[in-house]
Length: 211
Image (cartoon, rainbow, N blue to C red; front, top):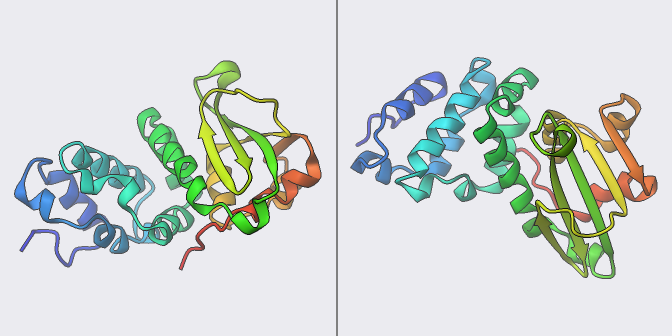
């Protein structure tokens, strides 16, 4: 029996930080059970960052703790139920920001709606503000082509649309906490190119909805 069984909230985060990555205890844990026992609304403003940092440290020796192992709905719950302040704490830490963004973009291919995208070929360039790339952005290219979606950090093709957005607002968008229209009229998303396509872009994906 591990020391974290039955723990929730900040007590669980504290326990995760104490576990050694190469211990038998770390290898006996289920990352989905851990994610399911956490409700960001029960945590402080810096605790979501602490949680994700602890999981990343454990994943170095126990691959089962990699964020890729977290069930899509549980992952969506973690992001959707986190406050803006909690998410800003996450993206303020460069390695963690990159890990979470990479995880989200890597999952896009699994969530493409092949029925809607089977005849589509469209390139989307994403610019996430506060980054270290050209112009101060983290950049991702998503190519939707014949029912598949691939992601690259290099901008290889001419985009149908370029979307500029802050990471926290991007998180809110992909977890159904905000719509493109609301973000657009409030100035939190900027679109260059095909506005009509951008407005319906999310509809090409079957993104998991928080439970």
